[in-house]
Image (cartoon, rainbow, N blue to C red; front, side):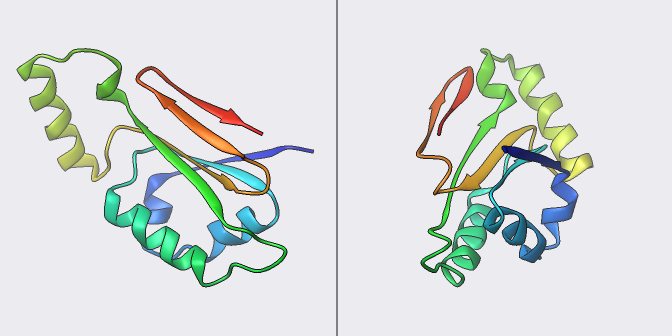
Length: 116
């Protein structure tokens, strides 16, 4: 059975990845309602490396930024910057899954493809 869990970015912002990693170890695919920053991705990978074992081989992750979907004007970019400053999150989507389930995540400008 495939399980997919949608979690708010605010839950990850605290830097506590234990619940997230527990779900990933159980085979759940996680969708975060924002694009993670490179430092957040690095922190998550670092925490994941600490728990790698024979039963859990790691994660695959990729992000899609909504502003990548179309050519934006300066006004659009400015508006997006203001939204990010107010909400504290980057507009987009991040998919994180157990490596044993997801063989590859392919990122195209308009979509993310999961190969299982």
